[in-house]
Length: 356
Ligand code: PEP
Ligand code: MN
Image (spheres, protein in one colour):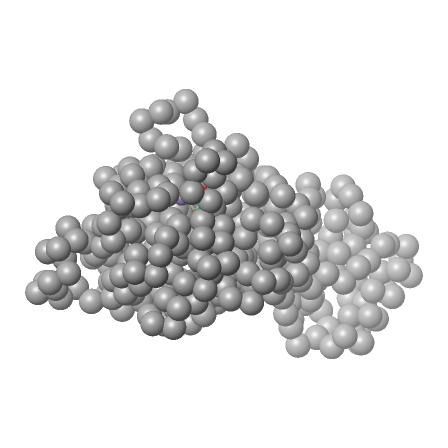
């Protein structure tokens, strides 16, 4: 189907037999109709441009939505209240502010465990860390790969934090999915469509990062690859785009945060670390992202940024992260929202004196 489509959205409780009757009803009136569920929400996609009257014995749709341009299942009208994505015990998109933090790359057990323990204490609800690193240069540290994944699983066991980690290759998806709690698609792979199909089918939540040369339309279309594979657990991540500005690593597109929230029911995340490349900008950009409506932040934190093998120049220290969490907590109050993790801001904390 192409051009204008009409989407008929039903309550999750509608029975398969009733949906089949609806499809038969559309086909009788000469339209093409297919069932395309969005998670547990049944959606019938039809080519019929006219809205068909409800047959008296069939359940009414809860919404009838016009769609075009390849953006279908992500439309906000399908779920006006928004989608909540569960990563372990973290609920992203439920109105609270969730922070996922950790090193850019997993480097060794000690580095990961120290960082993970501290970000958990300061209120992160998930641990980020790349085991497979897509690097601009083939000579740069490429990640610990499968060993990195084992270390992430170990850090989860110690801290209870669910793991978000990048998958870069279709051949790895099954094996990474057996360990990770959420799969990250990096900016460089946002339009790797085979990879999108695979992660859609893997059944885990997906953090889909916006390509730095991609428009908002293109991010929303990329998300459809995952949604149409039957997986509605997708988070859209704004991580900065390339502009003529060169004092920051990329330019965080703050209007994209609000735009994606308006157009889509999917939760939106902001990555203040990769977008700015500057620890001093992480706090202001995080605050702006949350004020623009972001549901979550993805923050680089390293116990010793100066020794990091990847992106150390943009990582917060644990002390910097703690300050960020305190500021976000105050912002949350002002916005009538709450932080989803419990923040331990004990001023006697000895770790802060050694890691500041
Ligand atoms: C990352 O988050 O580790 C990363 C590589 O980010 P991006 O894909 O946004 O560059
Ligand atoms: Mn990085």
